Length: 187
View 1: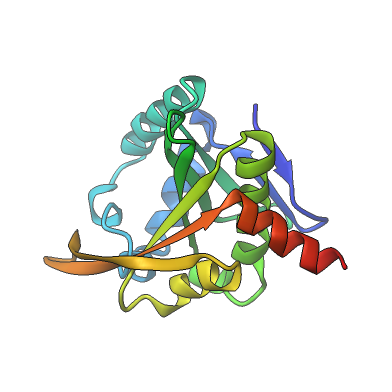
View 2: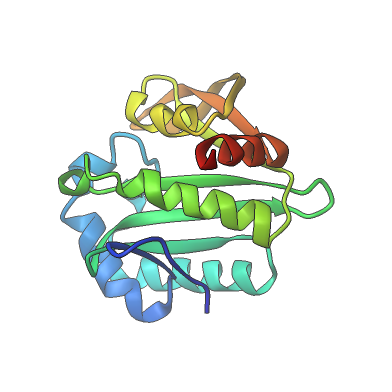
């Protein structure tokens, strides 16, 4: 089972079916906040749907196509980070993430994403990671920008959310850029 200890406060764990109840209640109790930028939230209305989703994510992991990790902050489920759409031929994947509102401002996503980027580049050997953010989702955009992702363009009407289409900004980061950034941080 994949598990990444980020630091003394944060651990990332591969979601298992026994997490379905906890994940459902995390989403249910934060539905209004999460639905602002996550199109799937309004469709996940029962624990059984999370069982099915987690089963699908486990198959993805077994087939080396990606993973969905629970973010635990001081032992409490705070959100999730995923590596999805792994394309081994082109050595690339996408990262997605969300955090509940009351856990914002603690550096949780920043530290978790940093660990997943390093895992993807150094353990999996990927060459490119992509992040897509809503054009008006400035909090989400701050993450790839902080880590040196390059803004590569916009997908017009790239996602259907809350009854309308909205644009997505595409960010990309290459393994060599990440290695250079880490080298500057160590010096």
